[in-house]
Structure formats: C-alpha cells, structure tokens
Image (cartoon, rainbow, N blue to C red; front, side, top):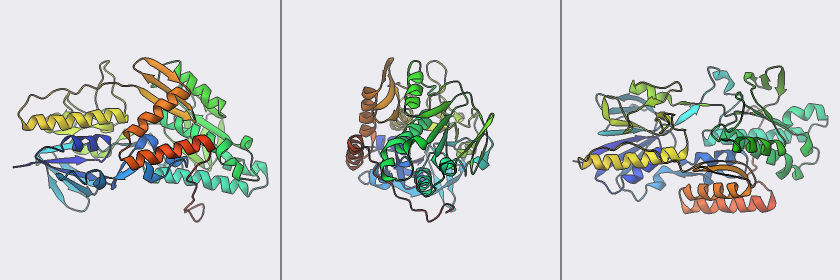
Length: 416
C-alpha cells in the first residue's frame, strides 16, 4: 500500500522534496495558502517595478502537472496531531500522513510592535511586493503635483529598515528608481530631491558577509545616494514616518526587513524552539519523538559545522528538500538514515545595476562580475523556461535603457 507524504509549504524545501519523490510509489499532498511557488530572492524586483509577479512565480499545479503522484491542496493548516498523524485545515478537512514535511517558511518579526506592520510592510509575498511598489509609484505621482519643494519632500523620502540582503537590495533598487530610471518621465521633481535611508540597529550592514564585502556594500550604497544609519534602532513607526534616536524621518514610504520569525504553525508540533520560533530538529531533520515528522527551510533550526544556525536562504531549503526526498526513499527500502550536511556554495547580494557582492567558498567578489554571477545563478534556479527567458529579457532591457518595465498603479486612492 502506498505511503502518504504530506508537504506543508510550496517553497523551495517543499517543492524540492516532492520533486525528489517523483519516481517513487508514494502519494504526495502539497498544502499551501497560495496556489504558486514564489522565487523569493527576486521578490524585491517586483517591489521595485523591475519585474512582474508572473516572472518569479509559477502555479504549483503547473510545476507538477506531469508528476501524477502529486496532489495540490489550496488551504490553510490550522492544526497538526503528532500522535494521530493528521493535519487539519481551516475548511474543516483532515488529511492523514505516514510522513509529514513541514516547510511553512517564516514571516517578518516586528519585535512585539505588530501595529508597525500596516505602516512598514515586509517583503515575503507577491501582495507585499505589489503594496510596496504602489506606495513608491503613488508617492512619485503625489510629489509631481506639489509645487512647494518642502511639502513634497516626504513623498520623495524612502526608509528601509534592516541592513540584511533584502534591505540592501531594496535600498539599491529604490535609489535607481528615484535617482535615475523614472525621473525622466516627471517634469516637476528632480533626482537630487530624493532621500533614501537604510536604517540598521547593528554596527554594519550585510553581516553575513565578511570584510571587506560588507564595507564595500555600504560604500556602494552611499555612492548611489543612500544614507546608511548604523547603530540606529527604530523607536516608533507611524503612518507619516519613522522615529529614531534624536530625529523623526517624515515619509509614507517605509519598508521593513529587520528580522524574521518562524511560522506560528511550528507551535502546533509542541517541540523545543529557538528564540525566533524555529523547531530544533535532529540531524536527520526529524523532530524529537516522531521520526516521521520533519521540519525544513526557514522553520528549522539546524547547526552548521561551527555550531551556528544555518541561515534562512534558498540554497539551504533546496538542499534540505532534496535530502528529505532521498531520506524518505531510503526509508521505504529500510536503509539506514543519513544526517543532513549543508554544502555552502557561497553567499551573494545585489545592490543595483552591475553592483553586487559575493563570497564563493572564500573567494570574494564585488562589482560587475559579482552582479553577473548573481544574475546567472538566479536565472538558473528559476522554475520554468518561460520565467528564465522573461527575467533575462527584462534585465537586458533594463541594463541597456535604464527603464523599469512594470509601473502600474491599481489603487484608486491613497487609502485604498
């Protein structure tokens, strides 16, 4: 009789697990709140009006249209019963499993200030990206209609909170939008009127990178016109701006990227978690007391060779998904389980057009070559030939013309 494998989450870990089980005699059910797999590393480019949502997302059903042992369920998981091996959905349905792979991802951590979320959206979903994109475009339109330079200043001010890769990439993209690519289409506002702030509570940005890349990243941003505020914790966020120590930056354009917390679904497992809610798993990624329940991706606390937790990056999730697919196949053949070992192939972050930093197994690159390497790798990992071709074409067009392709506002008014 076929075993039932339930995968919660259609991200990198979930998709790669299912793909590894393509040729096995198991029934796979993928459950996700959305109907698409999202290539999150390029989500900021949707927010920055460089790419369309369809360029970096693909329906999960389309990915597995030829894999007949996969069923896709659109729904929200509300409960997990470890003992009865069942998963409960919001619509009242229950699914039984022999193996459960829990890969629900993470969400942004506002450190107890949940009211900040409505004023400073994070960047975890397509709807987040579209919200940020429309805020940026709407502010430019608003500023264009104000004759007084002092009164239009807030609409030409942008604040990005968090100096990690997402914050840096977003700040660089906004700098390109505000200071070059779109300004030629406006008549009343000038590039030098824009102000872009990157706020970081620590003493440096891109802390996952060793020097000199971190400092090179900061200098590149500053050369692009971004003011980097280090050791500057946020005191408060309001609809009209951000309060930091000693100053209030007035703007409606605020993006949050200052830290993540694991999906609240992990609490359903009733296992030990770390300070950001990730499940502490065994070396084979299973949870204590239940060898058939696994946690992967951003929701799993797994240590590297140095004893530090693995970062919440796409390569980590991809490798864990492939590992779990192989582990389940070995289990069906009664083979001895292996332990997960992460192979670090490098870390990259793009800052802007022809600007990036990369650390590939100790070799450090920056500038055009790092940007080219970053682009090729990201195109390679996109699912579907159509997506790869469209993204490549958009990037070439943007590189040659400095023009952003997707600049539509769907909102009817500022408050909608």
